[in-house]
Amino acid sequence: MKGKSVYVAGHRGMVGAALLRRLAREDVNLVTVDRREVDLCNQAAVFDWFAKVRPQVIFLAAAKVGGIVANDTLRAEFIYDNIAIAANVIQAAHLNGAEKLMFLGSSCIYPKLAPQPLREDSVLTGPLEPTNEPYAIAKIAGIKMAEAYRSQYGSDFISVMPTNLYGPGDNYHPELSHVVAALIRRFHEAKVAGAKSVIVWGTGTPRREFLYVDDMADACVHLMKTYSSAELVNIGTGEDITIAEFARVVAAIVGYGGEIGFDTSRPDGTPRKLLDVSRLAKLGWRATTSLEDGVRRAYAAYLSHT
Ligand SMILES: NC(=O)C1=CN([C@@H]2O[C@H](COP(=O)(O)OP(=O)(O)OC[C@H]3O[C@@H](n4cnc5c(N)ncnc54)[C@H](OP(=O)(O)O)[C@@H]3O)[C@@H](O)[C@H]2O)C=CC1
Ligand SMILES: C[C@H]1O[C@H](OP(=O)(O)OP(=O)(O)OC[C@H]2O[C@@H](n3cnc4c(=O)[nH]c(N)nc43)[C@H](O)[C@@H]2O)[C@@H](O)[C@@H](O)C1=O
Image (tube, rainbow, N blue to C red):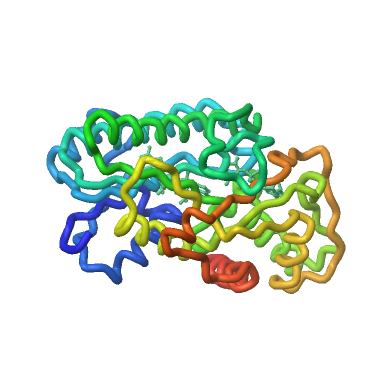
C-alpha cells in the first residue's frame, strides 16, 4: 500500500470513517468521493470516476446497511443497491487496472443453521436467515465476483466477512439500526426520562458477536497488506453473548437501573452468529478492544453527538 492511491468507498459510513482514521497512520494517498458526486449504484458515474482517478488499492466499504428490521422491510433496496455497488465497483476496478481490492461481506452470508463457530467454508451449504436473505445474496454475489475476477483475470481481489460491528459513527435510528446503537440510545433516553422499564426486541436468547469498528479497520488494513488469496477471511472476536446479557452490559455502562423487558413479537433473527476466527489468528491478527471498553467508547461517541 505504501505510496499508493487508496480509495475508501463508503468513507462517511461507520467502517469507512474508521478506515480513514486507521489509514491516516499509513504512508498512502487517500482518495474519497462524495455520494452526491458519484452514486455507486450508477454504473456510468462509477466507470467515469474510476477512469479519471484510477485508484490502485480499494476498500469496498460502501453498502446499504441496517439492522434486522431494515433488512427485513427494505428488501428490494438491500438486494438492488448491494448488488449494484459490488458489480459497479469491482468491474470498474478491473477495467482500470486496480492492484488490489477488498470486498466487505458480512457474517450473515452463512446459512442460518450452519455449525458454530461459523467457518469460512460453510458459505452456500444451506438456507439463509430469511430476515436478511436479500442482503446476504447480494453479499454472496460480491464474494463470487471477487473470486471470479481472481480466477479469470488474476486480479488480487480479496473478501472479508465481518461480524456485527459497532462504534463511533453508527446509525442510531430507533427502528432501522443494529442492536448496539439501538440499545445505547434506548437505555440513555430511558435514563434521562427516568423510565421504569426498557423493552428489548425478541426473546433475548439469540447470541451475537460484536466487534469494535476501529478493531475492524485495523484488521482490514492488516489483511490488505498481508493477504492475497481467494478464500474468505472472517473478522471477529471469537466470543459471543446473548442479547439479554448484552442488554445488561449496555444498561450498566449507560447507568440505567430500571427493568428490562422483552417484546417477543419482534424478530430474533439468526439464533447464533459466532465466527470461527482461527484463519484470521493464523494470519497474525486478533481483536484488542473488550466489549465493555468498546461499548463505553461507543456511548461516549453517542453522547458527543446528541
Ligand atoms: N455495521 C455492521 O454491523 C456490519 C457492516 N458490514 C459491512 O461493512 C461495510 C460498511 O458498513 P457500515 O460502515 O456499518 O455502514 P454505513 O451505513 O455506516 O456506511 C455505508 C456507507 O456506504 C455509502 N453508500 C451506500 N450506498 C451508496 C451509494 N449508492 N453510493 C455511494 N455511497 C453509498 C454510505 O454513504 P452516505 O454516508 O453518503 O450515505 C456510507 O458512507 C458494508 O459493506 C457492510 O455491509 C458487515 C458486517 C456487519
Ligand atoms: C450485522 C447484521 O445485522 C443484521 O442481523 P442481526 O445480527 O440480526 O442484527 P441486529 O443488530 O439488528 O439484531 C441483533 C439481535 O438483537 C435483537 N435486538 C434486540 N433489541 C433490538 C433493537 O432495539 N434493535 C435491533 N436492531 N435489534 C435488537 C434482534 O432481535 C436480534 O436478535 C442483518 O440483518 C445483517 O444486516 C447483518 O449483517
